[in-house]
Amino acid sequence: MYWQTARFRIELTSPKVMGIVNVTPDSFSDGGLHADVHGALAHCERLIGEGAEILDIGGESSRPGATPLSVEEELRRILPVTLHALKLGVPISVDTCKPEVMRVVLGEGADIVNDIHALTAPGALECLAAHPQAGVCVMHMQGLPVYMQDRPQYKDVVDEVLRFLGSRCEALCALGISRERIVIDPGIGFGKSVAHNVELLARQGELLVLGRPLLVGWSRKSTLGALTGRKVEERLAASVAAALAAVQRGASIVRVHDVAATVDALKIWRAAGLAAAPWHNAPIDDTGTP
Image (cartoon, rainbow, N blue to C red):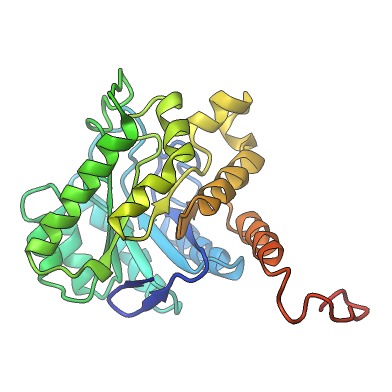
């Protein structure tokens, strides 16, 4: 399986780490840390150095209660960072739900649109259809960020997420957007209770019936805090554990803040799966490298 994007055909035979670049003053986890252009550019380079294989740049916070941005302000935040990141040699995703922003960043060469609204805004589908190679990630969310966590309710959260994502895939394909360009995201923490998020993880494999790669984002989410009692800045271990659990259940891409730790954990996970590889019983040299 692979993900076709504007400049890259991303092989998904092994899980990929997508590094988060929040160019925002108010994101739940790292708001303000990389809000200026120079800080965000340095963060992009640092994440790639730590092993990120995709960067996801966002200028508008989607935390519960967040205030929506104007198109102009969102572009002011993300466009300089996106233009620089496009020179770094990895696929660049832009986290936006506004067709006007999509049109600009795709016109500048961005590889992927990552839309928490799953291209439901008027004109969003047509915008992607006009860029015949660009990748897209469509996510499930119940409600809108301003009120999504008030009282999320489902009869069967996995079934409802599955049906919604399936319908969005069909809507994209109906406009000629090939399935190879589409990745799906169950939307952990977006209009879901702790119990809903845990059930989605436990039954995540059921989403694979759609035949498209899964992108999953557990990094530093409030559910991890509820399960561990840890504050947001103390959720590294829980975030890495959740990413590994998601990969074990079929996720192809994990979207994370803590790239280095996640990359290291996945190296161990891969090594455990390669126990029968030819080098498994080879001598170890004095550097510890097989």
